[in-house]
Length: 329
Image 1 (cartoon, helix red, strand yellow):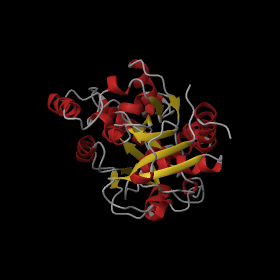
Image 2: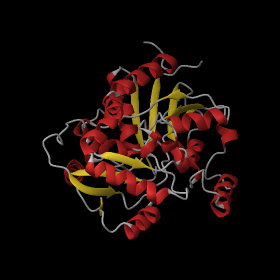
Image 3: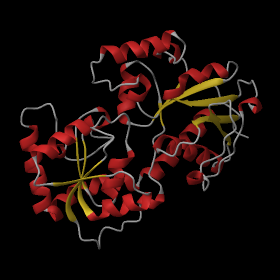
């Protein structure tokens, strides 16, 4: 196995979301372990700085022109930007699967001929790499969903998962009186959520939108339930943030929600919106949560412990990465 002197992680500029934060966390932990690690922001045509939200991480920025044409440098690229690998013709490339569905541009469970056509057209036009062309590259996965996908395509990969930052580990909900409120992200599974809102007007639904991070946290801490019937392209952060804030979680069964590793909760809290009795099961589940909250929340203790251990698990993943791919000084 080839080993490297330097790691450069490619990151989309000016974005403050789960994926970019993980890319910054990776560089931070590599640096802490003594690795010569840098981040480079794309698009490459402009000069970018580290977003304020990530300035507490140890980040070394490198521009495209400063990256040497050397096989001793490993370039790490998220799965949504495989096309930029052509900018590094003399470097070794690793693809980090922060999601699965976002690579394709549509949920794998969705049989949309038009979107599939767009995906293949982009490959033909050189706007993304095919799985065949990526097969000989190094691969990392953020979720069990991605690991299973890569395994199905006969691609070997190393675990590089993620963790919530410490602001979500300070449990503040214990002394807060919980309200019978159903929270949801209006950007995910909104068609299903709107149907539930229409059919169950006795429940109070509240969207999480136009809020600061602090306001989101307070809202989660005050509410009993968070629902997510959208597609889960990777191991999503919002469900974990909700659970750490003391919410019961109900999800669908799409993407990473389908397995028991990425979202390890009892199956009765995972509802298939395609089943004929979906709405009756939803009502029964919500009624039980609202009337028996103290018992229901105990069902999420295992998930909370998993989330608490994620940072140490990530450190272990980074240590394995260093042992496997970095030349010892």
